[in-house]
Amino acid sequence: MERDAVDGDLLDCPWVPVCISGSQLLAKTWFGDTAYRILLTDLHSVWEEEMDTRAIQDRAQELNRRLRAPVHAFFSHMCEVAHPCLSGRVEDGGALQFSLNHHGGDINLKLKSELAGVPFYWEFRCTPAPVVMVCSQLVRPLLLMSRLLQRQVGQLGALLARKDTELQDYRDNGAVLSRERLQTELFEEQSYRENFLTQTVPQVCARQGSLGFDSELQELCSAVTSYGNTNARKRKISERHAPEEDESTTEARDPDHAASGTQPPGEEVNHGLDQGEKRQTGQGDRARTTDSEISNEEQTTVPMAAAADRPAARPKKKKAKGLFG
Image 1 (cartoon, rainbow, N blue to C red):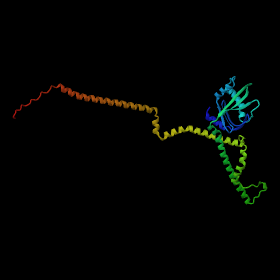
Image 2: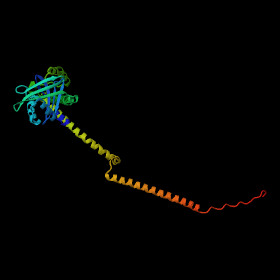
Image 3: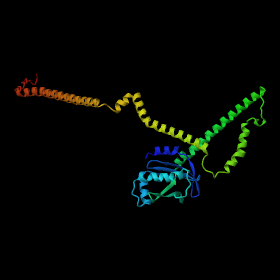
Image 4: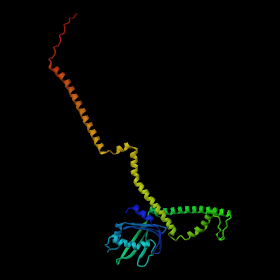
């Protein structure tokens, strides 16, 4: 299971309010063919669990000793009974038993149902989610939503100002309202913002216990996460192709570097032949040098030998000199 793909699929899933064993939570769940991912938060902590096929098989054997079916045989049943509760469509109770227990910093969701007339047990064992996941799945989308809503308020304020200018133009040209109850005051953005902060904000903050979004905010949240997910996938695709483009650009700018980095097989053979020729040439040079040395030695030795074969020369007679002459 590719982590990036699962993160993207989970990002497209909405946060929905659920109530399990009297606990109000926000849940985000993704169910694949034989894998799932779940996020839960009570706005104080965030928990997660990710399970693949092998992990699901091991836990099913642990909780259901007599179960011998493959994962795909019982996973569809688990999705049918658990997903409605985790998506806020069905309240826990009735034949399905869904309970929540805290174990230190972890939470366990225990599920009990019937599979082919036999009790089927399952547990979602959620541990604290890492900060990076909380930011990507909750904090960043909320910040984007607040920025978009702020821009929407600014655009609506500008629209109201233009409407006031238009109505004033009608009045200047003699237009009169047929019903006085339609009469409105000029929109002043500063006074409106002050009234909003002093009147509306306290009313909303007094209902902090209510989790989840209404339909319009849920639609905005889905649009934000979907657009962000698309951009993230595009970035990943561009990052995969970036090294190839950099390598081709480097080769185009510096052909000598590319030639020195890798040589075709033919060039390597030619290079080897050149080296062989050089070696042969060197050997020939050495051979020629040796021959010349030998010939020089012979030339030097032969005259010496010839001189040895000649008889020794007779010493010259010295003239007798007198004592007085």
